[in-house]
Image (cartoon, each protein chain N blue to C red):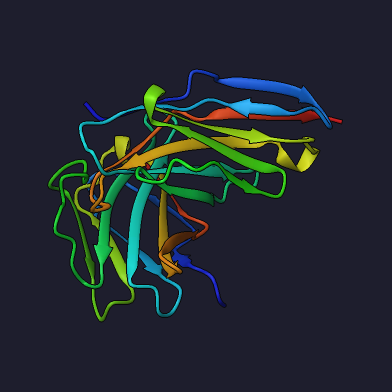
Length: 115
Length: 114
């Protein structure tokens, strides 16, 4: 498809397990964002990639979270030793620049439930 | 501190009325970006606009318009002649110039009654 895709769409895991969330941006988009949305915390920014580089990881909630992007395309967000407070919808967006203006395109999200 | 405030939690309007969603921000940066997003009941976020802090011109896109005023640190969003399809949660956001720091408001839930 032409849009941003995320997998899995839903994930149920047990507390303490590791999970890996995947984002496939729109082809050619160099910028990629991860956010999460939970009932308790609203919308939160996690990390931003320009190409393969994410110079600022301070938005990640804890050191259990890591993200990488290879080949300037697919990105994975990994959560180690999941906790119940990690339950949220994890959103990915990629962006394009046209005439100096950025437009972001969001994926459908991955709904993570930690039991 | 960097912060975005959307004081209106919920708004209801009757179809065809105009409605303005308020957004007030705080930032230490002299250069920054402001955003509006729409999240319809389906849940998928939709990007509406990004505005550079150096550009205070008002923006109009169809029935949507945005009023950016640095003097009051506000970036308000107006929907003219609202329609039922405008029913959604709308989020305002602020980012630093690098895109590495991003702050969302708590959202305003808009219901347009037919």
